[in-house]
Image (cartoon, rainbow, N blue to C red; front, side, top):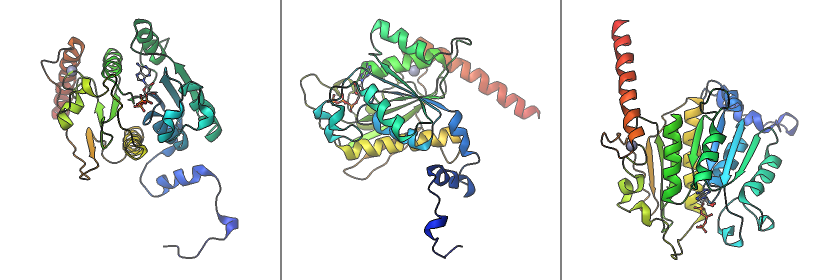
Length: 291
Ligand code: ATP
Ligand code: ZN
């Protein structure tokens, strides 16, 4: 091992060489692959904006960002946005900041509500390749704070056969979770809502009208870090991609689990995806047995 102190002249100032060191050290086979990846971040609040910044600093190829809200002074207890952003849409403020941090990332801000009828169609169209009709993104990240938006993301991803990752922070700000949803393979958001699994909280009560939810930049930053770490593992093929990871900060408890799809899921597209996945898995098993 190298023990001598490097002189200033040899210190590499290129930010990418520290990322490429992951490859030299054998953690990832091909770090450069990240340049060809596209990720959609839905919700640019306390978790989404930080996740978007991490992906930008990691050199993601293309980033689609969705939010309908504007930056307010009340957001200053979180990371990323600054007072001078107040009044700007979160998507525009993020695009300006992220372009300064890493001009090589292709940024696509979408200022829209994904849950309206028009919004649903526009959201799906923005994720769809116009020629093939298939998804043009590698991953969708749900960083929203309400049930309806998650149901919308679930539906669009089921329709596109798109893998997505859900994230959330509890109303009392001291716990959170991330979850990978692979249509047909894992539980979808309607098979069993993740927070019900995690803590017995009804997801619908997560954001109650008129109730001022607590929020901590620590929990949101940790959940964003857990989320993007899982994104990197998934995109670059290293380590073990977690299916579900909870974070309960009061006990420092990190439960993990695999949530199987529910054969009686209320979403017919989910049941259809489950059947298709089963057929595919059986074919692959038969092929393997034959070889
Ligand atoms: P507050 O707790 O004050 O509401 P917040 O709205 O920033 O803060 P976060 O949990 O930090 O909440 O972030 C969630 C983000 O998701 C918000 O920026 C919100 O605007 C966005 N969001 C929620 N629902 C939708 C939707 N249907 N379409 C687009 N963006 C959405
Ligand atoms: Zn389901």
